[in-house]
Length: 329
Image 1 (cartoon, rainbow, N blue to C red):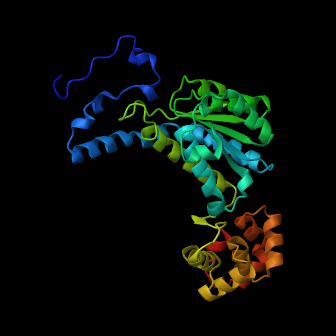
Image 2: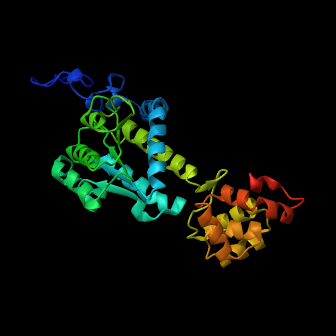
Image 3: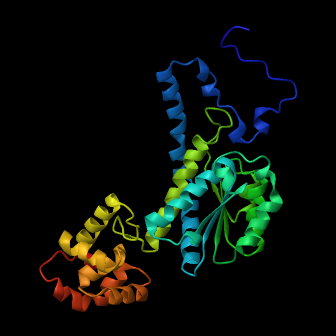
């Protein structure tokens, strides 16, 4: 057979339109192995560019999921993401980032991965096909009405994920399904189908590419928007991050200094007083109160700095006379 000639399709193959889009071959990428490297990279990059478009088209659904998450979170609920394979690993990465970025307790953003922790490093044979394990995981976590259960599966067919979402709904937890296929079992099972229609992959079936990129973008949007709504961001500054290294400690000093309108030395002193917790240090520095009072004010305002400012505006405006008052916004 001449180089570059497509191999004949074996008899018995399903026609392309019988396959989910994530399993179909992208016609425009049929010659990847023949391309010079610059063209190969450009072709792969061009294919991935559609991921952002798919997320943009799904923003109304992302908004609905954010609203559910925020409402449940305020009642003490959790975000429980359930995935298998690549999708599960993307969900696990998102869950791992929330505590250091937003100061959330690890048990409040949970990733449930088919095959368990081992599946983070390697494929676990048959794990995603174990529907009983998916449902059992929801029972084990005792998910309920305050929790949001988000199934993540590019094809939307992973039995572990679909069963988990169905069981969560039976336990009266709100559910959403992040998938690339609108007609998939996951989209049908989820209370909110969050469909990122990325279509066939440049490397057929390799959903770590377009579909995975879109999933990562959507999860970043979802968790970040929710945490902003919940007061973990002030303006565009993280105020609940954990300063666990030199770079982050320097950021903490800058953040307190900029938000509270104090000198860096005063910001660092406030951070020391507050055991390097950024948000209480901002309150200490801005209102010139001790750590216990800062904690009390934050608790009364449910952690929302702007509510703290509104509650103390009459007294504090006099303290900050002549300075930029954007802190009271």
